Amino acid sequence: MKSLFHKTSTFPAIILLAAALGGCGGGGGNTSSAPSTASNSSQDSGSTSSSGSTSTTPAQPAVPYPAFTPPLPVITSHVAKPQVIAHPIVIPVFFPGTPDQSATAGYLQSLVQSNNWGTLAQYGVTTATIGTPIVASSNPPATVTTTDIDNFVGANAAAWTPSPTGSEIYVLFYPTSTTSIANNPGVGYHTVRWLNPANFNSAVEYAVIPYKSLQADAYLIYHEIAETATDPNIQGYYWPNIDSTAWLSMYDGYMELADACTATDFFPESDLGQAEHAIFSDANVLAGQSPCSIPSSAANSLQMFGGFPVLTATQASQKSSLNPNAQNIDHVVHIAPGASVTIPVKLFSYGPLPAAINVQILQLNLASDKSNAATFTLDKSTGNNGDTINLTITAPSTALSGSTPYITFSVLTMVRDSSGNEHYGYPFPGMVVN
Image 1 (cartoon, rainbow, N blue to C red):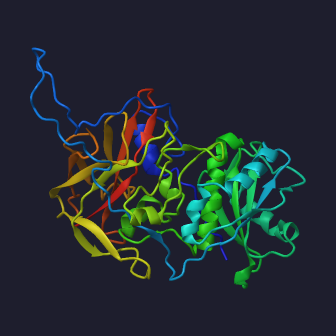
Image 2 (image 1 turned 45 degrees about the horizontal axis):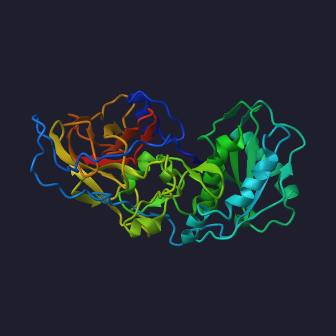
């Protein structure tokens, strides 16, 4: 069976936002210096007149965080009972040139006991163990392909674990001497090798990390292990239960649990000593909390913020009609060919921000010939928690048709702190139909 890749997202929306706003940022989100004392433009404690006297205008009530709780999906599966690796056995595979081997092994031991790892319990992934590290006899070539890597795993898996349990996750740490992994679907990735395509139990789950150092790539290790454990062989958690057409358009078809928080800030994980991303929490969504929760002690990282496009019409989902765990509904805005409609975009933040929220719109499914290009116009490009920005969308003059009779777009947000560091908000998709 052909391997199916799950990529670590530095998804295009975030890259394009950084470029458009004059910044740079890979990996989605950043850890920046401590923000200055935040203010919210919707809050007013009175003003001083030009003569110096204090206005008698009464203070307005403080805007809560968040001022608006955005309706988020929970992440489910396309199968009735999602498959997970409940008790992973994580086995690092090093090469002679892999850096920080001892420290990486120690990090893995700490990772599976960390607070962040505990997020996975709600999906059925609990205790994990770290197997004895494997060190290959020689370094890989400077250039390899994903097929080369898959063949390497296939040729060695039986020797690595003569009596597999089906819970093994091999993590391959490629040294910097391997300068190119052709067809690499992301920064890192996880996939499956079938030792016997006719035997479903012969699957070997593995992740690939182009590895610079533990400090640089600790987040990527956790990201790929968490996704392998919660979505082995694309039988686990990767499918949003509502608005799946738009969400999956933004995540290239796979909204896995780690991908779904890639846009939010890194934060220093106190019990790991490394910068991490959160893992998407369905439990938090159901409780009305941020799904990508950052510890309140992480002073240099901002809580989740963003802009939500309010779409009031619904239709049967273009993507999830066969998904037993989905609501099979897409929220849309109807716009006739060549016509324009204005919708509200509601800004929110789960905590104080050091500056106003910058907003841009990106069309996700733009055709190569731009024949389906829509026009997006904001009445203002910045705002704060609790503000509403008006977005006018003009549909292309030609009717939307064919295999994708719709337009998907994303509301992108960014805050720049007092040190000039850029923090990306949570991207929310929207959908246009005629």
